[in-house]
Length: 210
Image (cartoon, rainbow, N blue to C red):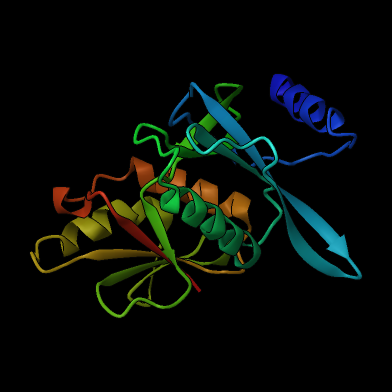
């Protein structure tokens, strides 16, 4: 973690600025190493009592994997629209497109004491409520609602297992727009630990933020 802080400060000092980002924290490493990468930073800003998300993508190269270093204090309502703009730019690029290049979020694995990465290349965000499916909604204070029924995190796997007996079930993962980006990453890491029906895994993954 100290090593990553030095990278952040060095990169921004070289641009004539001194900046700092508080990374999200997790308890496991999803991806440990990423080669051929470009760092992108989304900062937490307060101006005239308003919270803002400020993007710095000066060092990004379309043909590389993008690492998004996002301040954990930012609410999703500010972070996700900026992320969507970055995704769109990369998806629309034709001349320098690299099919092997991925997009990752960075976070600190506090157990392994290392920098870790969470892939989100195939995630398509929607800023609205889903119109169908079994809604799994992550709200504040680690509360989870499954079709408006409150379910404890440690009981979610068993609860979904009961529902999965119905072949028509399709889970739709949603997130409260007011939770912090740090909480979002922790929820995503948790979702990665679940065992979902094989039909849930596809190339295009929609997530709803509202």
